[in-house]
Image (spheres, rainbow, N blue to C red):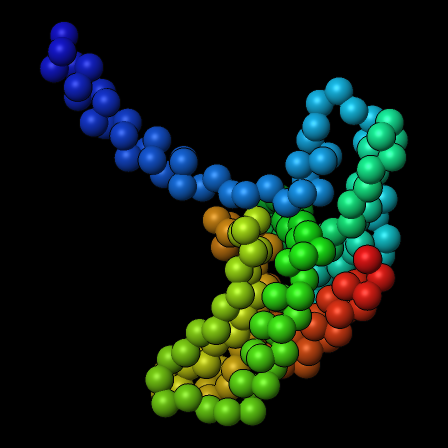
Length: 182
C-alpha cells in the first residue's frame, strides 16, 4: 500500500510542479475585477491596432466604493484551421514606464548589427513580454535583420506576434499615448 501511494506521488509530482509554474501574477485591474461581493464596471476605450493587436485603455470601477483603476488592455485573435482564440494581456499603469523605456532602447538597437544571435526582452509580472532578436546566421529566415515581438501570455506561444521595426515603433507610440491618457 505504501509503495502504491509513493509510486502515485512520484508519477504526479512533475505534473503538479508544472501546473504551479504556470501561475502568473494578476494585474491590479484584474484583482479589482475579480473581487467578490462588489459591483464592477469595466470600460474598454479603443486606442489603435498594430498587426492585429488591439490596444485599449481598460478602466475598472467599483460602483459601490467609487474606486477605479486604469490599465493597458491588449488583445489578439489567433485563428487556426479548427478554432479561434483571443489572447489577452493587462498591464498596470506603473508597468508602462518600464515598457516604454525598454521599447525605446530596443528600437535604438535596431540601428546596430550583432555578430551572434541576440535577444532583448522586457517582461511584466503578468507574463506579458516584448522584445526583439537579431539572428546573423546564414540560415536565418530574416537575414541580418532585427525582428520585434510581443507575447501576450507567458505560457502560450500562440499569443506571440512578430513585428517589423516600423510595427514595433508604432506599438511604442501607442503605448506612450495610452500612458498619457491614464
